[in-house]
Length: 208
Image (tube, rainbow, N blue to C red; front, side, top):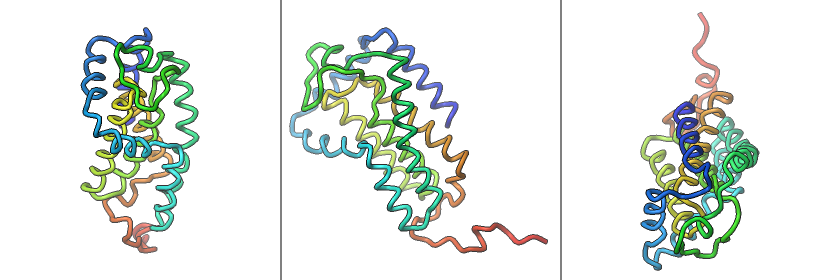
């Protein structure tokens, strides 16, 4: 997952490096940004899944279910996001769709400012990547679906171009992969959060 995420981010960065949105990216942007106005409230709600406090909220839930490794990883998502988002914006200095895409519809978002990558996408996909490592498949799929909805919402509102979101998602998944390698978040993969992990299972099989 780490290798694939880095490759996707590199591809997005190369394409967006000239500061413009190409014809294909503009077409995708207009397809999402031009969706009906009645979607505004659901999309507005979906974008809040990517606020900086969200990993801490999910970490608090992980603590309730005694998933210490998951909680620690979620807390570390915040500083990782802040650092890597700044690095990405230094590498690719592209403006928001209000400047780079003709006829962009802006729904309560800034017209100017560096756009690559989406910080919201970094957060939601980092959370989803970590939850996929520990939750049963159907709940992990839900976490990924919510992250995708968040990315669509940022494009719909006019805050980001599509590659900003894809690049941010790649960074988020890379963060999840690295934190798993460090903290072994996936140790209890597939076990429901509410299912207590026996002490013997935590320690591993007895020695002979």
